[in-house]
Length: 454
Ligand SMILES: [Zn+2]
Image (tube, rainbow, N blue to C red; front, side, top):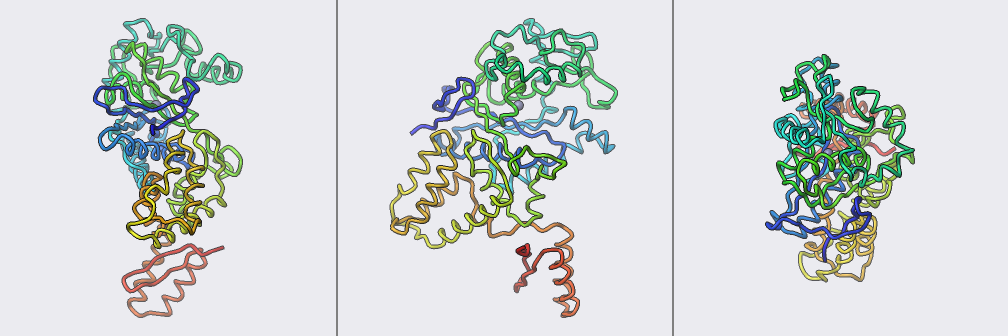
């Protein structure tokens, strides 16, 4: 049975198939901008894409899926952050790339096969812009910036149905116009941004003068370099659909003269407590914010899998508690399973609904039906296969949430004084830990920390 997925361009659920004669499915997923920690809204996209990747690996076999996910390491936000901190851009983006990798590992997301950076592909971006200039799809403004001429591409807006959305977009276009008054038309977008003083050292030579690439062109250039001119699947959060993906299509198709991506997949937004995530309300959670509250990264992953990718998902702390419970149930169930025997197809429905437009809530529901049906015979191998495609590492669940550094420092101190048999000091430190909301469990070879139940 093939994998079927909703295609945002044709608005249909379609089969995913590689088109290249080598049989390798080419998969591009827009990655993070590395200037701050990613929040759980970002991770909803990465976790959903991770299940998709795992499902594709299973379907097409090892080496038959090539997954590329970029890192945006030069843009207004990264440059502003570096300037504010008085550090080189590369130091800032390196720091946040490492943090992104650590968070992805904690969430058990597979690494992409290639993780290209925008600054590592300046040449490729300049080359593409050069072709667009030659073909008349782009023009140089007086200040040295280069813009894509939207009116030169007849298919512009087909992905986002931009004409139908024009009313809504009025304000967005005005905002875009405000930052670049050199454009011939408000809907034209920057391919190359002329150097400005605030860019500091972060600009490169080009045929149009010093500057830096616009954001959209990086994905077109890196996708072309690592996957070729036509790819099989392009994914991202629904917030990227317009203008980012619309612009990627325009640039790539005008430059290469062939279809850019054969399939587009977008996951919907994440809400927190029923509302848009907001910094001022403290709901723009990072993974660290949630582990500091005592939740395991695996519970965060599970929670992000609880909704259908094409529907908004409401994230609450209650749903995290429910996820911890569900994981504990799965772990206890796994411990009862024999290695062999039982019905090898007992999870057939789980895989069928995942293959049918990545229906995650249906798959989790079916999983618990099996877990709760005492009459079914299940073996550990079949069960592990389901855990593996969902990326649920039940061993990691047992490793509790990481305590904040200050708490670990207190615990280390208490461990040391206890080893030195200063029990009065050890007791005092235990009380201090408890007051901070943590309980310390001593074992022969060390200790573990658990958040106290409220
Ligand atoms: Zn992109």
